[in-house]
Image 1 (tube, rainbow, N blue to C red):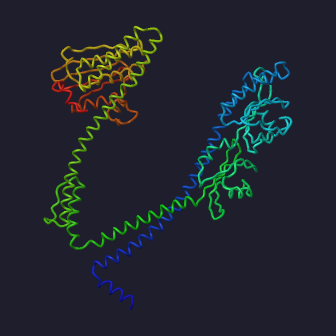
Image 2: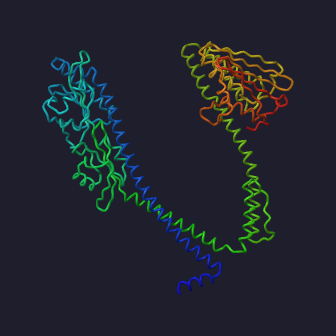
Image 3: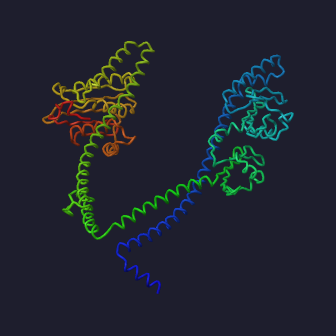
Length: 593
């Protein structure tokens, strides 16, 4: 009876009340479901983030350690054959032994300055007598002779190759009580290759891993161990205490532990070359706090979104729904490109204002589309202009280099001619800021350019010209021939490793000005020709000289049929521009790019 009463009461409510209760229930259900999904998602992502961050930290540390030790090992190779080391070890009973000892000591101090991570360098004779250099104090020797150490047999087997140990396998002790990585090498005679002595380079573990400590933060930590010895302890005392009672071999690649209400993820990473175990620890609590903050923000955004959704739902009624549906149908037409005005209501109520706003928006969209087309065209012109300007700097550098070579080799007259050609080239290229120039000026630019290139590539090519006198006054866009000539030189003739010919022709027929640039270089295949027309002009692998020039001409003369390219492998390439005579007298101000 009670449920029937509730059902009857609910159905007797107004539609607005029904919608209010329905939407409120749906909102709470949605919030609850989304919270569950977010919680599961962020829990999974948190563990993934922790694992990834830890692995990256350990790999970065190990790679930097190995890289630093590799540099020191490479530098140590230089020490083995130096005169100071060889003289000291070979002439230990000679009258000049004291001099050799002093020379070696000075040499080791200078060498130490070139190894920032090394704390000391020692050259030792088989008897145990040694000379060394240290930043602070030399280590103390615990065993009389190196032959009695655990690493001596391995060192002799490697015949000069380095081995790495901690504190020289117990052979050294250091006053500061820190651990040191010791690089040990057998020193052989440069004359007969028999063993002379030993090289020791000691690197402080703290210095070697200082970068890792500096990059460390309040939620990540790591230590390094070798066997049962701790080379570098954790910064966290709790982790150190725990680690003292745990065997490294008992740890898995991934471990989760709890210490003092904190949860840590431990990853073990072993470096085979050093036999070191890197154990990295990440504190879950810090990352969990970050995810909780994000989770809280997401929940608030979710609640606000649903609140607005509820307000919108409660505001819908039969006086709004029908006109809005009609207006929506009109708006749907805009998806197909139909931007006609909507005529839903003649009144100035809220729906009427929305209709007027939509109509205004349609007008603005149409204006923006038109403006966008114009803007894109101007932008493309600007980009092509940038490509045009990119043609010049590397050529200037090469030309100045050639001039510098001529000056230093006392070829002053040639250097003077080149400077004059270079100045004329850039004076005519700039053309007082004009974007269109006469064909005569363009030909002069090419001649000066090729004159400069002949210094760089003597006897590599010859240039020929067939220019009708009556076409020299025709106006063309600035710098359209130079990039094509450059293309012929660098991509056509130079790869043949033989002398070639670059030929430039210009003449009129009944309707067009024809400009032709040809060479007898390596030519192009059909696929290469196809790539010129179809490749993305913004690709870094696409030559901007040829492609950019063609696009400039197409935009300027407003036609796609402006250029033809004829080429065959090993026969050369010919590029022909066909310019309508009616457009060869355009003024500079008409070229707006």
